[in-house]
Length: 301
Image 1: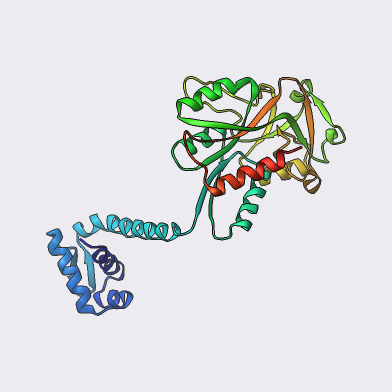
Image 2 (image 1 turned 180 degrees about the horizontal axis):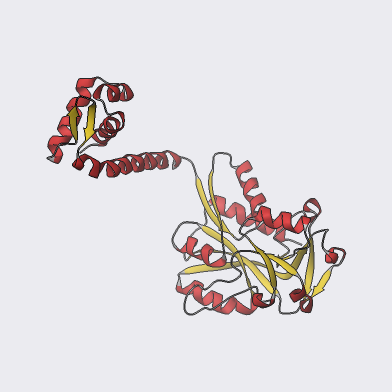
């Protein structure tokens, strides 16, 4: 069986006419008839009933139509993937961050022939993307108090975590929030604020690691008003309402541009480590190294 035969079969099934199918396929009607006849002989059953109104799929023809359609579609996808492989492709996962959005724009501008596939996700999703080979590299941050448990999970999954820097937890607030004029906030004030949060503030990687939050405060004690995985919605809510967010001061670059202020949380245990996850023994591609270098440049004091 050849792909061409399935393409002719689909054209006939949709056109319900040999002559119309031949026009679609840019060939002659006798040629279409010949291809369909050979396919029927190969399958050992008729695909069409010839009626006065044209072609009508037999029960057998109906049963294989969807399979034929999917086969042709998948062949097209494979063909397109083959074409894209001639261009360098870079697969990356990150937590929700305007910083990495800007870094990927910079990567593309410096490598205009690249294909970039970027995914945002929770820590668990980022780990799974790298573990399954969906992404070459995954950027995330984890609380210092949970780093040992986190590294144990990473090791069992044959992954490596490379730390890039430590940050203090910050509260992000916009001009509509009364805290906007301040530089710090105490941890005791957090339960009295309203938050916009990502859809998951923790991850449960396996039975050996239970809930891992930012390590700053139990998320159950916070007043979470909006949950979203959209950085656009998060940014606009911070700018136009009194909602706040929590993270590291590496999440919203160019605070003056966005009008968002970061307030350090006054708590010694609120250290967060930013880094990236890769496969054990994996040598980073040139594009991955560029992103790592861009990140390191931003972290420099």
